[in-house]
Length: 512
Ligand code: BG6
Picture 1 (cartoon, rainbow, N blue to C red):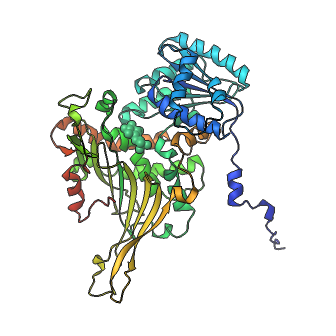
Picture 2 (cartoon, rainbow, N blue to C red):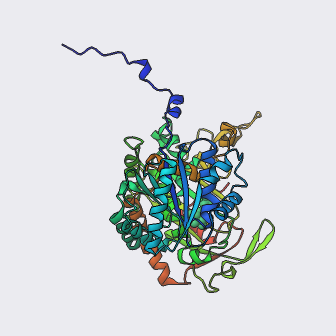
Picture 3 (cartoon, rainbow, N blue to C red):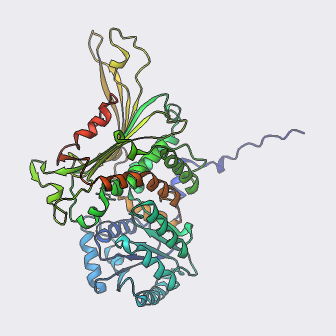
């Protein structure tokens, strides 16, 4: 007998509003931050945790234990945190929050530090009833990661009656080999499901929105391919210079600092296939395939697809700014890349032949991160004598920051009796639509670690492929030294060579 279709039970269908309410609170836990006297902790991590506490999104029972080499009392640590919370909005729960923050001074290489740590967390676990759940956050200089992880393992801090998770800040290695080595060291102590490799771009609301935009709307996906898209550009412009980070940046340069992680993550999100679900591994599988499809090209051997630049002295906001080589702590003959532009192709069916142009640099004209998707021209023009190529093609922009939002440019008839057309813009502004500023990226990421959700964290295979793609370029640059390094005035959009990269293909940068 044929089965009779059962009516769908209405009570089981969740609305969009229910979906939001479904987000449960994390379980109680202790948050242990290594590198707690550093800049990142006070500028980003503590304000993010505080804002979660303020919004009642942290569990009722939690504590924060800072670990670092500097000798600080609990009170001095709290004072430093308080200083960093100055701009964090309503301070309703400040005293309660600060009372949960304590500090442990110790050498990262000394086993005694970890013995002391074990004792401290045992005590704090009892006070806060955290049942042995610990989130370790490595915000130390990256050279210490392997050693800290090994010490955590040796002290048995990787085991507990509750969950243990470890968050690792970028940079995750400086080449494919070193990333593999670091990964092996981590996997000796922690299982992959415990490891959260953070890339703060993935916590940005507008970056998360790329997946919503692509996969919660039906109208864009059918045209999201080589048949309709002419090119995709990803720009992460920064107006700041190297600031006080010359020690790190001289070893890194923009390719390692911005491309290997942030720009390649944006590229992966915009180019990936629809995942089978919004599950961490399903999403990350698709992103990894994008990186694998990039690896068909050897950019180092194709000079026409890479530009390396460094800022010379220039002007920003009408103020003179020094050259990179004149910045404090920078070698006056430095060949470090502060700007790079790449032309890559994602070699698969969807993207065959579509160029992806990526660029990022310090001391550019503006702080602006955006993805611009330019569609093809209309196939023919009925508005003669205008030719099809003279009718502007549609551009969809994901404005990651600032002025977060999405816009779509299209052609419209200009008012009046004559046949004139203009490009107009349809605009979604994040702040205007939702009435709030996008939250700090780290808030979402902290919450996800506490919830055990790895979707917004880099998986090792993705990372390894991103290094595999970049290694030949980095090696090539190292051998080239100053040869081929293009200088650009601070306050510009980078060297002319970056414009040439597109112009030789009849395109130009789609900067607003
Ligand atoms: C960091 C880089 O990962 O990202 C910095 O190390 C860079 O050099 C920063 O300035 C940019 O982040 P944001 O969120 O300001 O775009």
